[in-house]
Image (cartoon, rainbow, N blue to C red):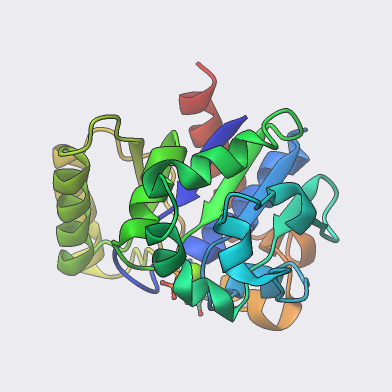
Length: 247
Ligand SMILES: Nc1ncnc2c1ncn2[C@@H]1O[C@H](COP(=O)(O)OP(=O)(O)OP(=O)(O)O)[C@@H](O)[C@H]1O
Ligand SMILES: [Mg+2]
């Protein structure tokens, strides 16, 4: 099982949007996919039309008795299962802090389902905290959406500097998100960042109103607008990621 996390220190950059669409693409290409919603906002849980409930609360899930299997729900999408979020996840840091090996805890929980899935995709809240470090301890790769503006590129640098201090850091897989090709700043920032970050994935996700419709549709773009450029971009982005993971 490959463990990926949509992660950024910055909020509102497209982490959850990517997690939902990439989970759909991974499953469409034959993978057994588990999405773990780690954000108390529960946006991924909402998109997958699952009731926001962590049975027994986050404290129990993270405790030595915790077992990820009992939290897994099927979604409407074939091949995609979900561990939903609820508001008790806001205390994830606190409960991890009280556990024996906080940094290894999420990895240990995921190890329990490793033979059931090909891909686990963790949708993370925007922060850098003990829970993030536990994500870094579990994930082989971080999928980092980057809006091509000055602030987003700054947070990418912050993240890479932090990861460099870790013993076994996950691979950083950044890609451009919410790109508006009509904006000169976007075009210029993309050119600069591509020169600086050779690992940037080739596919960029466009800023598109059809992506915003995921809210009312509660589904990945490919479910309601399969011929759109946005749906094609997520499919291609998954192909980029799969090429990095399985070669
Ligand atoms: N490519 C896109 N084009 C247009 N709108 C987008 C795009 N990607 C995301 N959005 C919109 O931007 C908002 C933030 O997206 P999303 O929730 O995926 O970001 P996030 O990084 O998960 O946010 P948070 O940090 O709050 O978890 C949402 O309203 C979403 O519909
Ligand atoms: Mg999110």
